[in-house]
Length: 290
Length: 269
Image (tube, rainbow over all chains, first blue to last red; front, side, top):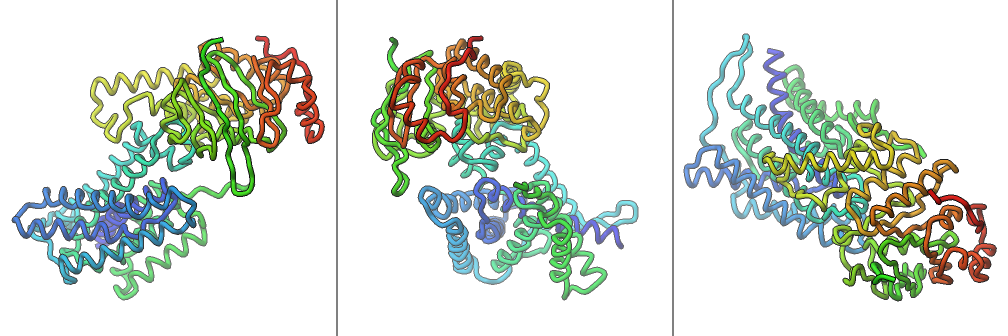
């Protein structure tokens, strides 16, 4: 029972982690929170589900639809909400507001296009199997492998490739990166597109886990991703990954051994407790004393 | 004298009510070492920021190898062959010493989002070359044994040398050095002078902002003096040193002894 709950928690948590990674990447290069992230990935997941239903497509091409849709929305977000505010002397928080505007438009567009009701994910991965007495749902295993695999690939890409180094350089200092010949606007665009594309995967994985996706899920899941961003330590990729898993496990255990009514309350209580011990988050850097 | 490499032509830069640069003109020829000196707040770092494109000049133009670069974004100017170091060291502190140098290779290698993902033979060859060049540069500045340390763990003088290695990784034609000797002791400064001479021997032109007069006098072919954003003198080191306008600018606002103009035997390495 405990192992099943833990596995369940890690599965849900891996999708939270994937969402939080999206916030973290954008926070890294722009120093800004993308308030439209939740709406972008739910919009993309809904588009994929509607496409699947309309054309009778299987699951794998649906993921490409979700990723492509989220990536396009990410590029649009960068073009209309971030870039125009980067050039001039605008208040620091202005891009936060413009992403909220973008999110509001997406919310309305989703309801116009798809309706406000939940959409069921067709062609679910059914079945389960038993490993050493622990029941494992096939769908959970698929989610876990996909989410953790993607994050491992992302980690390698960021650490090892020239473009990954350019993203890290831009995160530390956009000015210095530009002086060193790095086209920071292009790096930022690629990062926002990547973050959104990963969200596109996460949105559809969550749809698989819950069995359905509704437009209203964007806000709540977005806030969870945000909580994980802060829990892991602002801008830390390993922090976002571990924080997401932790949040998922705590939520599932809260439901299993407490009450589902208090699921979110217990999860956020855990986050508050972490901050009492580590105000900078799990992997956050201690502010430099000057 | 060969044709000028860098031409700064009537450049002004205004920040609100402050005229940080006021109609500054001078040029740098290939192979030269030119120093820019002046009291604190004279506009020296602003001049570097304008040349490297961090912000455009309010007035005037800057040409590099015959083409106007004022108004271009910093990464384009960098790709044309202008590299710089910073007065307040700006390393990527979370990266290793070696990775800091590799970042400098960005505009000299294929580095799109998919570069290095498929690991084709060509990419692996390029990766090996980047690695080899980065290590060679670390050897050149005497940091080869520190390659895998985080950049933030280096001593102050070593961080300055790492910044120079990172700038050299860009294969620049012109290297701008913003107070390279700041915070260094006498021995470190002497090593630095030798390093800067070696860089010149590789055919790289240097423009140096520096307070250490010993270093400036021993190293530079010409000196440009700024005061309150305007050029007040230009010429060979000895001539500038005895220029009444320069002496007045320094004596009037002398706040540390390094601002004192004195001849030096340094830099002859």
